Image (cartoon, helix red, strand yellow):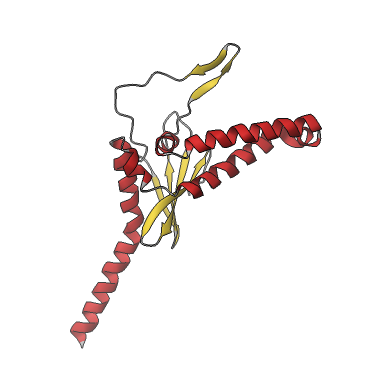
Length: 183
């Protein structure tokens, strides 16, 4: 009886360890896919509909905060916000792809800022491998089905990647851009 009880406790400990390590396995798959620039492998770790919803909500919130209450009250302001919302929706459709997810996780943007002559494009693509965005990451198990990774990208925008449990696997459901609480 003691052997059976000891075996049962050992089995429970192994299963609990596997359960707690499973999001790290998914993060390792994402990290490897980014390092090898493998879009198909990265896509296996992303819930694109959930990610689109998350990015769309962030975009709408950002536009509303930038516009302020005065713009939303006028007819012209409402039209401008609708156009901005439509344009951001098109951008989100591009960003919620394996290539776009890789760009977001690295904290990079496609352009720096607009100039009088148009957009000033970012530096040309380098032949050097991109830095590992998970090198100085902060990991946090927030609940039984939510795991977050805070990515500190030196010189770039901080990013929080949120994975959600889907059955036995974990998938990226949110990429939160900007300041995060790393506590």
